[in-house]
Amino acid sequence: MKLFHFSEEPGIQVFEPRTIYDQTDAKVWTIDEYHAPHYYFPRACPRVCIWPKDDTS
Image 1 (tube, rainbow, N blue to C red):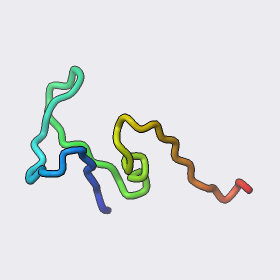
Image 2 (image 1 turned 90 degrees about the vertical axis):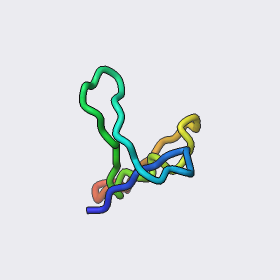
Image 3 (image 1 turned 180 degrees about the horizontal axis):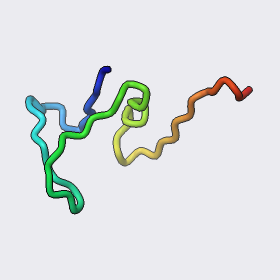
Image 4 (image 1 turned 90 degrees about the horizontal axis):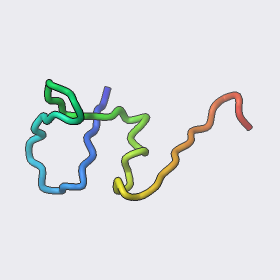
């Protein structure tokens, strides 16, 4: 499986785990290739992603 990390910071050399919200353990968040298109655009850009299914026309 390929995992991806998207960031608006182009100079990241090493991904450092961090905590968000009320979590106590730090994480580096990744996404799989199938869901990657959700992150192709900047965070401030509204986006909707759809995929065709076998039962749609």
